[in-house]
Image (cartoon, rainbow, N blue to C red; front, side, top):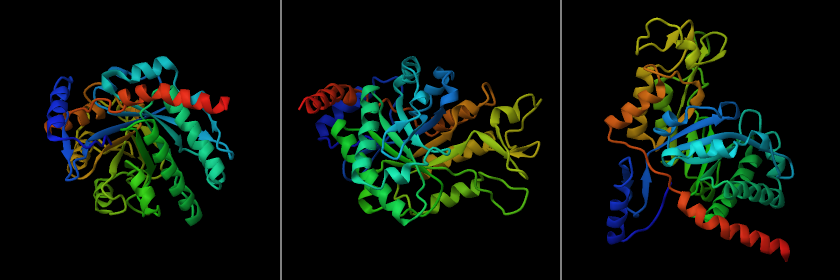
Length: 350
């Protein structure tokens, strides 16, 4: 989150500037003089780069392009999945932050090997930072769930290094970690390095036997009661459903399309459990009251029109006086990108 110490006078000036945005900025100010805004993170996989960006960027504050991977030496792989420049330009509409995700969906196979040495960790972080600077991205999302104590220690070191390097580039750059609800075994410095934990409150059946509901309101409440995330939790919601017996996944759009009449209360259609309009609205309200934001997997699964889940989120946020935050890191990273590049070139010359 954007964190800046301001005097009373400079705070007033900043407030006047913010009023010129198309959207009012709703801020929560802590006793330390730091400011945090409610964030809406939305994932965009490589096969969704032709989204209707106007409707998406009117609600989402942070678009996360999913996802890259790395090899055992810390070099980035899967760069063919990185969005083209015209996609990035479209995604930045309406002051939207643009981030890159590394890992997730079976793309963390070499993370443990990369994390073993300070050399490979440094190479990995440098590669991600270079990509961030070159493309004026506003942050990085790390999607890796360590398998044991050794890997948790590796991840702690990695997160601390990311925080150090991101802060060298510019203030306001975001570091997030995506993971399922669980106790965290990160060191205190690593916990402090992370801005938000994007908690994937889905894919977890509410019972051991059918019918299994994978993303219930009860699960969202349970995550809210966990103290693992030290006030940095963002509630993840699915734009897809799962079959109550087989667990097969199906997009929300595919579930509700061609159904003559949808009851907003419905969360089960044709044996697929999903988050319908009322449940998404309820979870949005819970997120405003108890979380630091909302996360969506994934934006291309929505159904356009009156059944849109994203529109339901937008309506609930508006009713709670929560409006979109303008891109926080854009100016900072633009100012520092040229300096960072010049420093790297100078080092290579030496």
